[in-house]
Image 1 (cartoon, rainbow, N blue to C red):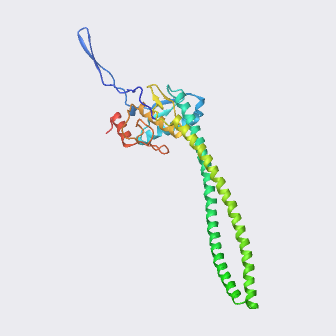
Image 2 (cartoon, rainbow, N blue to C red; image 1 turned 135 degrees about the vertical axis):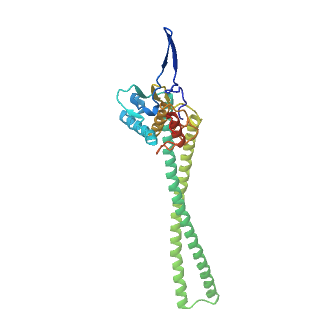
Image 3 (cartoon, helix red, strand yellow; image 1 turned 60 degrees about the vertical axis):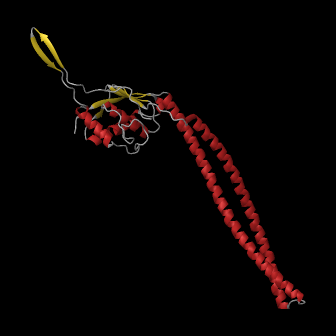
Amino acid sequence: MYMKTIRKYNRGVGVLSLLVILAGVIIVVMAVKPASVCEQTLAYDVGSINPKFNITKEEIVGLLGGAENIWEEGMGMNLFQYQPDADFKINLVFDERQRKTIAERRAREFLEKGGNSYEAVTKKYKSLLSLHKAGLKQYNERVASYEERLNKYNKEVAYYNSKGGASKEKYKELENTRIGFKSEVAGLNKTLKELNTLNSRVNTLAKEINKVAGTYNTKVAQYNNVFGASVTFDQGEYTGSEINVYQFDKKSDLRLVLTHEFGHALNLDHVENPTSVMYYLMGKQDLNNPKLSSEDIFALKTECGIK
């Protein structure tokens, strides 16, 4: 969730004229109009960093450099400058918002591990199930072929028995076939035993999948119960003299928050485009490659009086 503006920073003021009557002489005193945000560079420094954010000052300075580059490259101007001991501070303030973010991240990582475990077991199950189906299909085809040939053999034996017996050569041929059938049955029984063992492994994996799925679904329900509700809160705040960041999940989030708050430091309000840096919500912006939208650029050009 992007920040909701707490206080608008107004640098530009209108030109005022004061009429002072001294000794009967009218003296017109004109106030000098301050330079616009485009005519001066905002010097900033890193202020207070709560160690619970688990980020170094050097990392923050790097992200701030990235945030200022987004504005400066988009406008072709030098708008910001990191300067140690500058009065304008960037602070990371740890409170319930970041505490909940950390808890949510850990819970999400736990769910992702559980999901990976479920996928791994399911993948193994599908592999063994496919192997079992292919083996069973082949086994059934072998059995069908065996039964067809056995039926033909029995009919042939019955025929010769009805004729009082077969010749010596035919008897030997039929006997060899019978012995071959016996060996084939032994092979089929061995294959069936292997298939039954494989089937047992498949069933064991199915039970394991159901157990993992049950545990995972329980954790998902718990996660949704704690973190599922949509909550809106401020990630950062520009006060006029400093920027306070309260929440971010990843460094790419922090860079975008800093970029957004820099926009407020340039006296910009929120814009309507959800992909803009200055949109009030984080969600549809490109975190990996953030850049100014046409609305962001137009807002700053308007503030600076650039056509």
